Image (cartoon, rainbow, N blue to C red):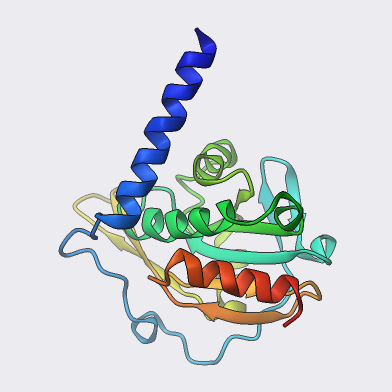
Length: 204
């Protein structure tokens, strides 16, 4: 019985991902804001940082030797984050097991008030086992975002506790030596993301 339920769940998730990649379009009125409108003034330089996960603190210096893929967003995001993470997941799925062992994707939540570490765990694992959700205090997040040329802002709605977060939506690829290798623009197809990851793995 458990095997039947698990098989059914796999089929449903696979169908959802295929639909997302082929047919889904962002809702009208919810667009990725231009990075210039979010206050990005300098080219990104990258760098090491420490943030929190359900596993404890994640220090990027301890991940040397792996290719890192960073994404800034939040779990309440209605469309942009699911699209970006769906494309990333599809690319990761095409890596061999050996390649996948050398890659770590980090989902950096810029909404720590609502995104608990347990919730980030389940959210990241929903998209891919190699996607680890991390977050921290806003002072930390603002510093890390600035290092990578990302930005975000909270936009209040009708009440003080009802808000959305406008955020940049690029992927940031960090090489084995901890250097920012390239920025992968929002909307880049899984095949191109896969090629960029493999180039970093091969030091090309």
